[in-house]
Image (tube, rainbow, N blue to C red):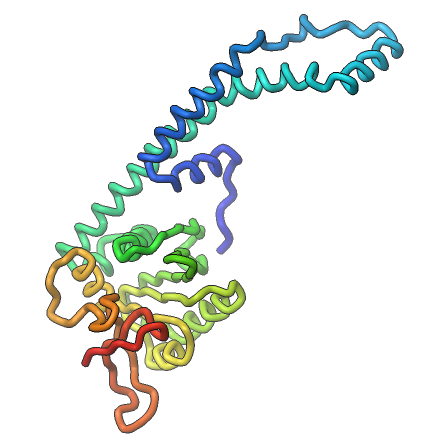
Length: 283
């Protein structure tokens, strides 16, 4: 589904909310400190202060004067822009900081709920909360997370991750009953290839079909099922889990993979989520 349309001001608030609150608030103070003196440099222009043009000759004379001295036209515009900006920018940054704090609080609540009740990732939350939970798990692993705001539970790429210079795409599927099939994995792989991303993740609260696992094993995609997500949540919180959760080589979280060839074809093992950069495994 496409993203829902929003106003220009709502877009600015979302942009401000993307900044950490501890950065938005000082930025708002700095904007006021810079713009307020400019707003007080001169009176605001009014309709009554504008010259009345009685003839075409007076209009031509005015245009010539503005051409020779453009500052005569720019000075009032600077005053107007500074007067409005001294209130608009701090206001937007303040609202953005508040939105950022609220979002962070909600993500923390979802994470604590999933940590105390592993089944919470599958039951008791909607698809939007599931996406926020997955984003929080990746944040706690050191990724920078951007929520795309797709307008629906099947809106395509739900999260964009960045770590260093690498960029990863994430699609979340909170499917309680159905298994995620190979079609979903193929679609994400096509987007990853088209956008030149370093890799991608498909995260579900349930399970994947065998075809989906085999296809993911042949490309740069990582599948995270509900069980693996529970281990990741335990791992980033520092709580012990019954299954090894960290790679023995790079200490990154492990994911379940399927052997494709040889005598053990079809069996599963724990592999590093940073594959192919890291080839650490656990049995």
